[in-house]
Length: 82
Image 1 (cartoon, rainbow, N blue to C red):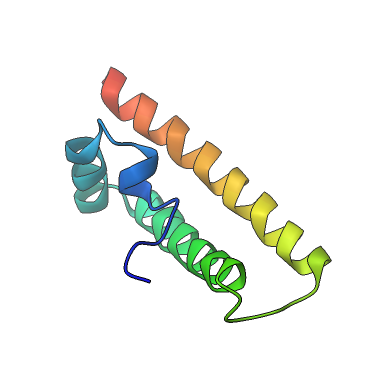
Image 2: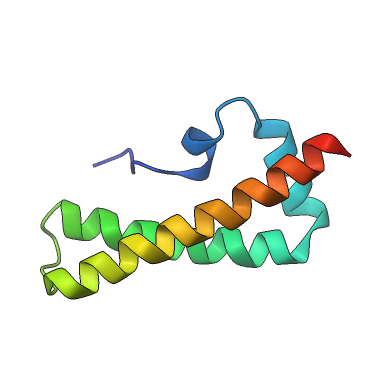
């Protein structure tokens, strides 16, 4: 499948330039973005039935993705306000 749902560009469709600038200038954002990409990719493989872990593990990953997106959203909002 060529499109992975929940990519950051899709989550923040009006903030591509902000995301780009953060990737260039904010090391913490880069770390969060990389971790989000890893968790999101793993969830995509699970949802595509490429991997079949326990429901508990899947729920843990979903919670991690939500926590990461919340923290990323705060950073994006702060960058837009600056």
